Structures are given as structure tokens and as C-alpha cells.
Image (cartoon, rainbow, N blue to C red; front, side, top):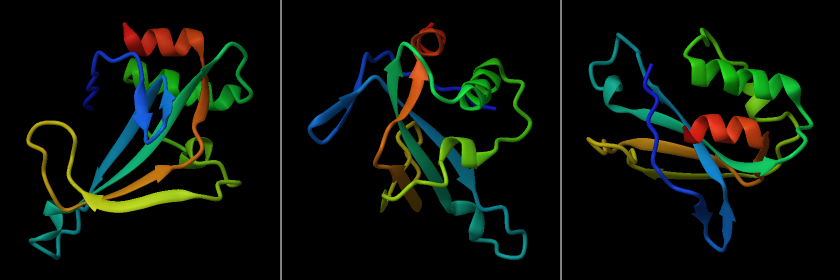
Length: 123
């Protein structure tokens, strides 16, 4: 488990500013291909802070990720089935060693989380 925080008050997606972002980083563990461990996929989610959340199950997933108790994550709670637009591009990781060979998938529409949860992420 790695929980990396940047001390920022917001992130920018072109002209829109969000209160945060979440990156789920995965790595190919195909043992039959010696080059496969050099390839990553990152699922990016912009976070919008709201007073009242619409999805308590999603809040619980975030809570378990923050506390380190998550053993698995139901991605359908983070990437809703109604998702219509995802930005995809090849790039690199945003944290040191900034490894390349990364396939990014970023939700266009931000996920709404509670102010109290956002404050836990900030602390």
C-alpha cells in the first residue's frame, strides 16, 4: 500500500479546477512476459467536494482506502456504470521515479465526495 499526498488545495483539468484527484496505479504482473512489469495503468478520478454525498457506498470505499483497510476495491463504485467519457493517453507516473510506459484513463466527470472525507485526505 502506498498513500502519496501532495499538499495542494486543488488540481486543474485544463480550465476546470477540482479540489483533488485520485490515482489508482496498477502494474501488469504477467509472469510469462519478462517485459510486462514495466507497464502500468493508472485510473484517474477528479474529486469534487460537496456538503451532501449521493453515494454512501463510494464514501465507504474511500474511507477504507485512506485507513489502509481496503483489501479489494469495487471499481464500479469509483467508475460508475453510467460513465460516458474517459480521457486516455500514454504518459508516465507523477511520483518519483516517474516511470514511463503508463496508460492513463481519467474520468471526465468528477466524483463527488464529502467535505469531511476530503478533510481526512488533506490531514
